[in-house]
Image (cartoon, rainbow, N blue to C red):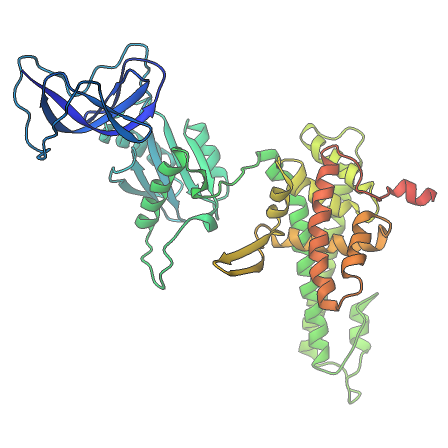
Length: 472
């Protein structure tokens, strides 16, 4: 009698007995020594022969002599007993549910959807109107039918962080979809000078990487930490203030530039329209009427921006100093008060650090803190070449600039701290360029020290609080 066997493909250590079915063409059997042996290709021999793989080496069973057939595609000879190619699963082994993977390429007018169920499966690509959640639900149901999935099968999705923000993420979660928001700059792309790029190609690429991410390849991209709606809403006050400050700077510079074209230098204080009427050019003549009218309109905008800034500052101060802050503001208010108690840190910087970083983002280590504002190094090593490419410059440009500005302030108002003394020892006697490089290193160290202090740690070494400074 001829017995049919399989050729060994791969082995896994698995303590429990029974069969292991990987697929209809990849069966497996548990050997006596606790190795799960997966088989492909047919092989034949006469008699009770067998072999398994032991520690990466093939080992033939005692008293057996296996004769492999060189033509693996040849059909096996019939036997008196019919053997199933895929053994039945034991009742105690649960079958994991199949997952539907979805990638969304978001646009203002259209959304491109790519569906798949795993590696090797050609994605199903569809286009729907942008923001049409009802159509998205319909396409999900159609994709389940297309891939033969039950209506209750889980769905895992992803899309790139961008213009649409996080409302799509929250809408998908509300529909029972497990979603991740991906940092677009972390997605791997070909390094050719020119590469094809369309919405369909982007969606297919995203869904392929989503399968890899779901299977455990965590380094395939960077996942964005999505804040809660309350945390996201709390950041608008300071961000609006930053926008108004930039607008105010632009308006003042424009007025000064227009006056410079006429050879006039004017300090923009007090009653500026009256000063514009009395000012004289290089030849003693007044300003041209159209230029003067434009300058008055520009000054009216400056006045409006200053009024808006005063309103926002008063509202923030009221929220920080409230005896009973709102429940959603308690973490941010507590951190703001704790940071503002330190010398060199005012209410504006403390509120910024609390709302943008410390009140909602749970950092695990100091590298995440420095990387959040782009103050980490970028090494470049290949063979004998070892060099640094500078800062990564990830994250918010405004937040990074504010932290560097805080480092200069820390040197002035906390001269006795360990960080200030370290900076002066290492960079104080250097050139202006070296001091500017050193202030970035100080900003990174200071931010890490403030993070540890904000989460309940001790004061930065040698630093003092404002009350202590006044008492001294």
